Length: 307
Image (cartoon, rainbow, N blue to C red):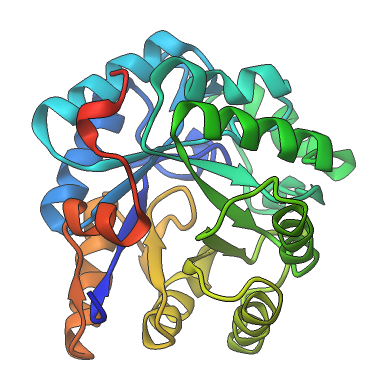
């Protein structure tokens, strides 16, 4: 498994709004189809949010999740990673209910609070397909994405009880220290899986130097771990390539970046997966299958989920 790289596709997220790209998947059918196409392109994991099919607003509706998850499972053997970040402003209960309902093999678990800012996107948007978009983006000038030690402990306890592996989302360097503390207290079990999320306004900038800093700090404080990188916007492929060369894994997808290259919008998540797979092969790296990803991350298997 030493040369196996896990490719994750983050299909739609809750950051970009429908006015930003005509290719952003909105309906359950669109989200599931994008996941299936990403699997065909080489993704082993898909990271899933859902949206209101009427207007594209991020949603916590469990019937929408069930529709997406069952369609993915019917067509592929993908590892499905459900969000507990949800949509900005969702309650703690809304964010974790998907883990309780579906018992996925993998789910995101955010490792600390940050100023999660999207309001600057308004500088480049002159019109909106849906009116909710303006308010959703503008409110983030005064928004804190809350992930306290209490919610970390409570979420992790739910994950442990249900057998779901946490994918710890690391938006800044202090979040590694948060995890190290909880590991030391015996509340988080090793081995851990870290996703370095770079380039969000309010979090760590997406630079090679910062990626090296994150990796070194995690090694010093935690020890052995599996890790991946996702980077917002134009830095996506540069940082994902660096991560693979440093022994990590890679996340692409329309949640993080709407473009395939400068000035060229991605028409699908699969296009981005195909690109990062092509890059990995140029360096002699092989992409992991879903079952190989399960082995690397110590996941319990697709036959033990509730969808």
